[in-house]
Length: 232
Image 1 (cartoon, helix red, strand yellow):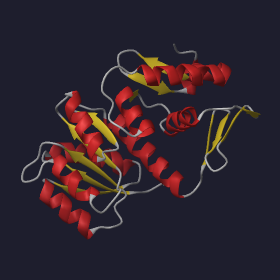
Image 2 (cartoon, one colour; image 1 turned 60 degrees about the vertical axis):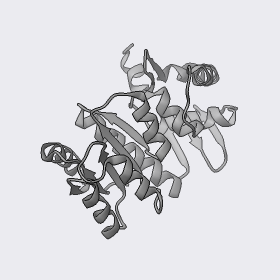
Image 3 (spheres, rainbow, N blue to C red; image 1 turned 45 degrees about the vertical axis):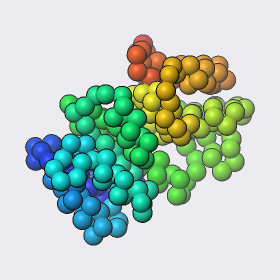
Image 4 (cartoon, one colour; image 1 turned 90 degrees about the vertical axis):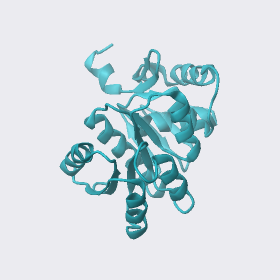
């Protein structure tokens, strides 16, 4: 999706302007709301909104209440912004149906990258089922993966994990985010299950497995460009 309509909800005008300017520069249309009630009114009045960027702490209705209301009638992609960095808040957001979670202060460029990754993913589910990055071709309809033209046999979870990495190329992904999107549940305890799947996936991908970078203390990032550029 090249141009999207995005609702930005934050009670700080400077944050809204910052996000709006970066999204406008990418050709997206931005609607703004300064509190939860205004956000729900705009959501109701504009059924063609493609994505919502939503702050947690706001007057009248907080972000979690807005998500609850939206999820009663819509699967609209939602990115939640918060100044709070507690894991329980992030898990609550995922449990309510938030797609991404970004803590303030944040990089506007990273936010835009995540917005466009979600839009690609949403558009891909509705249209093209094929993903192709750096010699890796994934076909959802055929449940088939080709690496440099050769078929690779993956388990269901390995396949979904690779698809998620391809859709979010260049974006750092926490283990919590991966578990929420690929395993579809809130995960408590250690993350050995995802580390095990990544290890197996890397092995099956051969040299291309090096494109899945470990981010110590956080999670993983799929970035073949780093490999090509010789970055560690």
